[in-house]
Length: 276
Image (cartoon, rainbow, N blue to C red; front, side, top):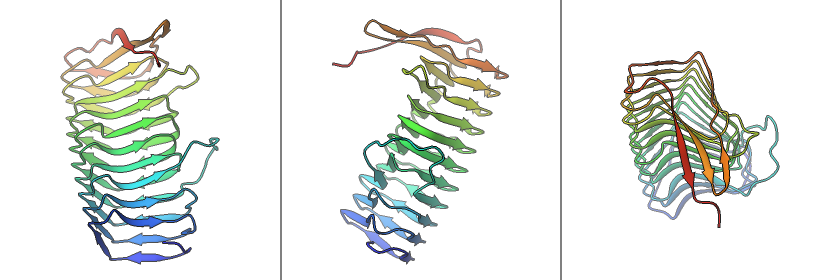
């Protein structure tokens, strides 16, 4: 797509290197009820794209990523509008579902099933994932690094083999999500003192390992229900890198830890190799 305002509806694209390339000039375009199968990258959106909507489409068996929207980091902007909206779409058995970096994107009322490496990968910038189901991911279901104004709201994450939600050095709000039968629930890693991730009103049950892991920093844990997990309810680990130590000091308010193998918070140390 090279022109503005194009609508692509009820098409199937398969076995391509790139199934659909959205050029920067493709502003205001819409993709509806499309099918993308066995491509390397199903949809590749280039920086500069704005006001694109993908609705009721399916992405299956794409070997690199179903949706790729990546650019280098710029100056974060407050309340930046989403450049792409992915609505009511299904992602199954892709290597990665949605890969984003520094391009604000909304994922809403969608379904991710059996993606091998990740369902949603955010490598910087803003994103919102809302009212979405994510299950049976082979790796971390949602992974966020260096995110800005990221919101994970009212999602359901079930039967993901590794960590359901992994956050590193990001401004993020994780609010009203339901996590069940995952390897680990939520992991928050903070190496920059100014960052205060918010984990609020989530329900975490029956993880194989720990429910909440906080490594360094002052993550806010508020009104979470952490119930019947097979590991520790909350593990708080000081982050040590070389001679530097970032103390884990999570702020706890109104959480319920009950029926876990260990209900009382457990402290410790996490050591990472310093950068070369």
